[in-house]
Image 1 (tube, helix red, strand yellow):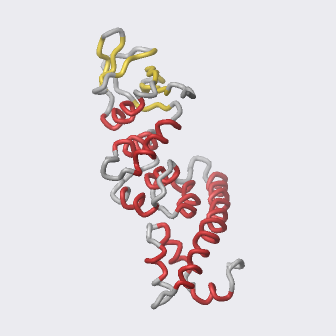
Image 2: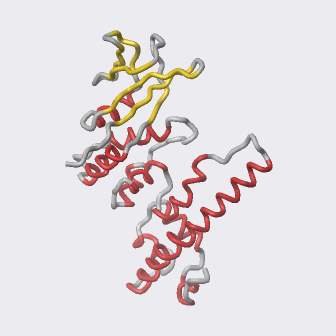
Image 3: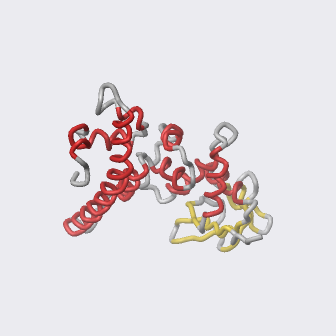
Amino acid sequence: MEKLDKQAKKKILDPSKIIQSWMEGQSLLQMVSTIEKSPTKDSLTLLSNYVYGYVAEDVSWSSAAFVRLLDSHVSEGHPTQKLDREWELIPSYIRMGVSSPSALLLLTAGLGDRELANRLTRNQDLSLEANDAWIRNISWAISLDSSEYPSLEKVQSNIIHRLGPFSFLFHPTSLIEGEVNVGLDGTVTSSGTIVGLIDPPFVSILSALRKRGFTAEMRTIGHVCYLEITPSLLRSN
């Protein structure tokens, strides 16, 4: 709070409430009514400076340091235990004003509407504990209807263009190693023989990748099979 002037300290009596409201997706116009019954232009300016200059910068950086220290403490005291993966996202949540991995993905991919990002992801229930969680998250983002929200078209394009190699669990009907083909319906074949069908959430992301191009390889580690996807390199015109 050292960077806040006396007027800000006087008006913002509960900083934690402001931070919580910011992460819940409330707009500045909604939040300003919590610090003043009859908000003025000056109050809105003060709150804007507080949120964008203090919360999004100083508080997010401080929380990043706290998460690192907490992770180190947990690792030292309980070597077999680890923090939930979402702890690592808290600094970004604070900076961007969101509270879910899905909303964070949309904003970092170029969506300039924080309120829309929060609204679209309100009913998303994504656990980052699953190994393929981020791929499922990306698949969800790709499957959103851009005709209803035109700004999503550029976001989806950015996601596809930035996507690097990834893998996900695959349950084949027969075990093989090496390159395979993936059909439009998710059917996986090798030398013309069907060897399995990928889960629906991954079909949409592979469909979106087809214009860019990709290769698929089946890999087996122990008794677990993975499908490794390598997007083609983008070529500049």
